[in-house]
Length: 87
Image 1 (cartoon, helix red, strand yellow):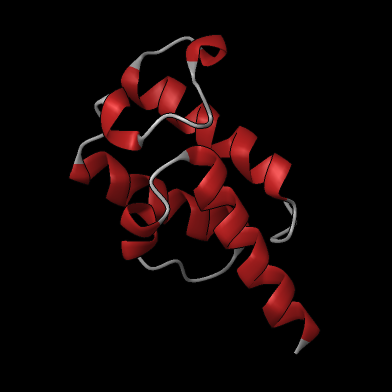
Image 2 (cartoon, rainbow, N blue to C red):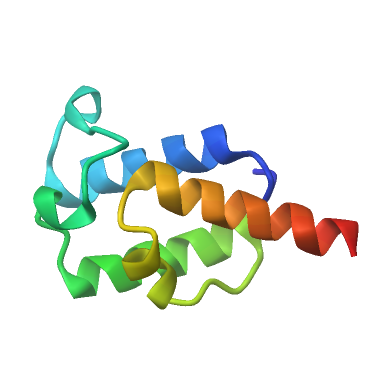
């Protein structure tokens, strides 16, 4: 997956939340706060680890709190990727 592809990153995060929390993927709202899904800090750390593996980049756990929705987190990761790729 491309580090700059926010749509694919959103889909990946939604899939993770669906599997991790047992929520149908069609019910995962990309603009809903992670806490509203019941995402625990343990699950959040697991998500960060999976994203790091998938995207081959380091992601600070604080990004989850600074960007508390799927859409915001995906955009932040993609923006960071495009900045580092441009450098």
